[in-house]
Amino acid sequence: MTAPLVERVYREHRARMLAALVRVLGDFELAEDSLQDACATALRRWPDTVPDDPVAWLLTVARNRALDRLRRAKLVREREPVAEATMTDFEAESSLAEVGDERLSLIFTCCHPALAMEARVALTLQAVVGLTAGQIARAFLVAEATLAQRLVRAKRKIRDARISLDVPADHLLPERLAGVLAVVYLIFTQGYTAEHDDAGLRREAIRLGKLVATLMPDEPEATGLVALLLLHDSRSVTRHTADGDVVLLADQDRARWNRAEIAEGVRLLDRALRHGTPGPYQLQAAIAAQHARATGTADTDWAAIAGLYAELLAVSPSPVVALNHAVAVAMADGPAAGLELVERIEGIERYHLLHATRADLLHRLGRPGEAAAAYRRAHELAANPADRRFLAGRLTALDGS
Image (cartoon, rainbow, N blue to C red; front, side, top):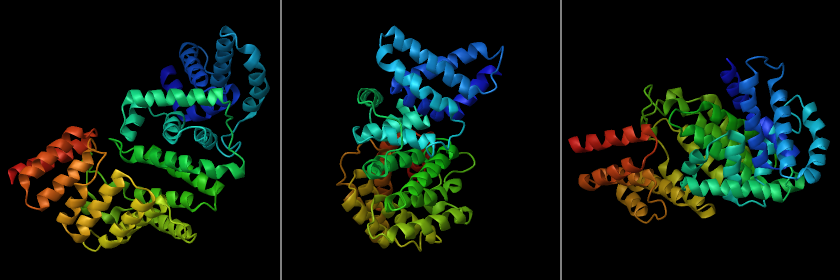
């Protein structure tokens, strides 16, 4: 029973414990290593005596291991007084609600403006959510080694700059907002696109998004992000079959979409848009709302969606947005118009959906040979087994016809 108990406590309280240790030590790497040491010690000792408060036990052991490391490194004169002074604070904390939310505190620390945007997002995904460097690298479409170096540099910059683990003062919140929202969105995306849809990650992202929106009620992008997450989440149960196979939007059973989430998402979107400053998350939420309002593909306002993607391209240009814009144009104006836009997109040659989209448009234009080649390339690049099965099925159907 010991190993499952240690694993459960670590999984459920990792972010809280890491936040407390980083606040005390001012060093991400030292906090992570010390927490791992404490878990290893628990595996040895808990078979004899399980503590009444496992979290407090792990924190105390981790803190002592950290101080031992500092002594051995001859840094105790500089750091131990700080650790001793703040230790009583986290020993007294019995609730995650202290300073609002431990995870939120950790997010705002990871999103410090001294860090590059890519580092802010990657560090938070690892520290708060517990994703591996490999998982984060796939989300960023970069090499794992590149991502690992990014994480190391970010952690050391926080240590060397002595960045504190606190929710910043109100006047400092806006400069960190973009990074925080990007983190929350990627947490949701990681759960939404996982091989086995991870509802826990999706719920965590929505919870964190609502915390940020509550903390910053005058920031329409924060509200817009929550709207976007709710609208996407409303379709989650229809995106795969019982066997885990992909179900395209056009084929989803809309009667099973979560109408309560849709209503809440639309209400929050309307509130955000009243500010008159539509940003990327509000525009994406507006696109999702168009899909939510339609009863099927045939009565979807594809011209409106294409127009919204054009606005999104203007405020937040990226190859992926350009690809989505091309899909909407193809639905509104025909596959030839969409394919013309797809052929202009650069920078995502290893993104499987670029080739899958191109394959679909070529097939619709009656060019099966080229479509098959594009489907094969998409299948080669897809990492998710469900995506690979879907693409293999499309290729088989195309070859059969």
